Image (cartoon, rainbow, N blue to C red; front, side, top):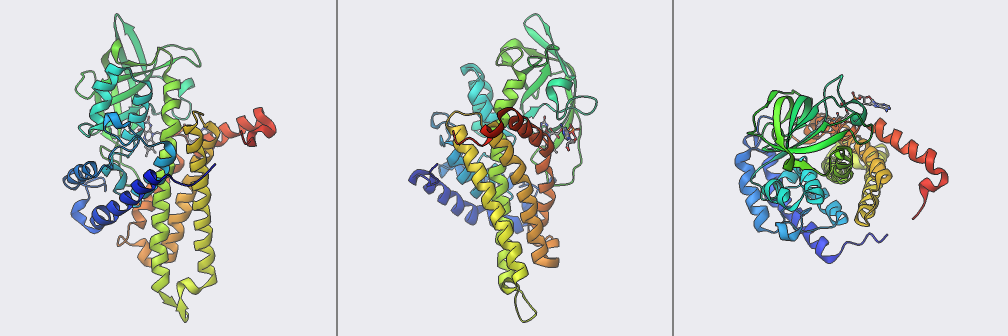
Length: 399
Ligand SMILES: Cc1cc2nc3c(=O)[nH]c(=O)nc-3n(C[C@H](O)[C@H](O)[C@H](O)COP(=O)(O)OP(=O)(O)OC[C@H]3O[C@@H](n4cnc5c(N)ncnc54)[C@H](O)[C@@H]3O)c2cc1C
């Protein structure tokens, strides 16, 4: 692997960095820039999105002919990290979850007609989207194939949906939904994915679930389905391919989480480094104390390890590999790294770090979801152990 960025990717990275510096970071200190979920307020977001688009920094993950920048995943790794130097960053560039993952999977598996109707408006920033899979107990969480209870029953050329979902990010503002439901009892081919629109009758949002951290726009919602009818033309892939679609989506979507989390981790150390450089105690700056140096050095090293894991997985995905192991390793490690970095930063900033005068406390509360979303860390470790037991020493193969 060569880690050198191409001149085009490096140029984009630099321009995103400058955009974040100039237009986004200043908003973080303005209370009116926050909405009810502690994310960027739509009044501030929309002008910034227009500006990012004009600057050619829009939808890096999408093909040029659809209005994106056509970046390889390695390029996204470098640029997404820069976007999330600000807590408000990714959504400004149309690189935030869940739209990011939804766009990528629709681009990969949608028919031309499905892409025109369901994907293009998300790329154009006209609508937001949601991915509807997880269910409250006794339905499916970590084990969707085995435990999904929401059913899609075929009635002529339509599917009737009944069931219960929760923790659906963005559902409060989404118009385009990707739904995974059970269509048979087959252990591998029992799930199927569908598209539906917010205005279709037969479903409702029961509540926006209160959570520990700040929210994506539209929150995390609990949904009830009773008789939602979906025409067969809005089925994604073949009947029984729901689990496959989920894996296609999550492969890259999990990795873009890592890219963004690394941005937040770096920002945390940036804030801490600036504080310890000035703040004095016991006759010197904090930065001159060896104990402080060890804390900063260790967190910086872990961020670098996370970046290497993420870049390696990105490179493998660019080669057409599913990179299942590599993505799982990056996801587990970077989720922990984000915790480590922001916790270290708060500690080093003392009471200032615990205050709301910096974004550290925002990042700290946000970070807790990283070990849960898109598969709990324990489940990724289970998958890794299966690979090890199957592959033996080949687990670490270079090829
Ligand atoms: C902020 C946030 C946003 C989310 N957004 C979405 C979304 O947009 N769409 C969507 O469909 N879902 C979403 N989810 C749901 C998320 O994908 C699930 O939380 C995750 O898959 C785990 O499922 P669960 O919560 O049901 O945990 P459970 O399956 O109940 O598991 C609970 C815990 O048990 C442990 N565990 C489970 N299996 C194993 C095992 N095999 N070995 C060891 N330990 C194990 C893990 O520690 C796990 O955390 C979101 C969740 C959060 C927190």
